[in-house]
Length: 267
Image (cartoon, rainbow, N blue to C red):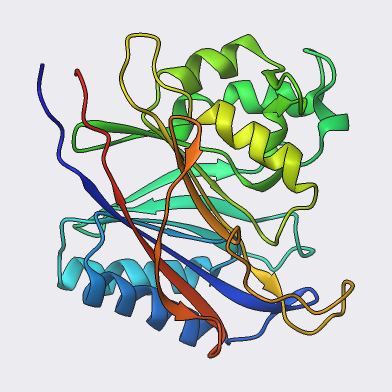
């Protein structure tokens, strides 16, 4: 048995005003880099839409390549392509490694439970095609990326279960499930049930974690004005949410939380 090191995990999200982010793209990029530099997380996970465009992503990776670090940044590019597509249709999730190299997890395959009711659903077919790209090694750990509403790969509240066996197999091989979202999801009880399932221990006894991080609506354009809640960012281990330390509370347009993640166990 080899004891794995504990991971320092950071999570950062931003205020939204309807379809737009409150902080401009350059400010968000600088805050992501500053969090990586100042707090030195092993794993820094941003909420959806954190990086505005590929141009900003490449600028961020150049800065990291000029000043390498040991940590990995998981982020999403809002406009992932050469053209500015309709909002919500071109975002893609990326990992920026400590030397500035990039890994592209890809674009979101589906967003609602209705889209994955059958094995032949286009969303599930697209998701299965992307399974290999959704995994990434971080030291002794394996990461798996779920983009926003792809959380619906698990359905049910009283008896949550995977709706696809290929996805279940891939996720059950994973040590840390990453699930950044564009905004706060509703139905807290169902979310809790899904997060518990996705953080259940490995069959052989090893520990698994689930990480979510969401933006919040600061202007009330999509309903009432939201405040950063304790479930805005969550880390679950073995079916239970962990306590966190909050280093930025949203007063300046962003929330940053820090977690100590102990995934020790057999490898």
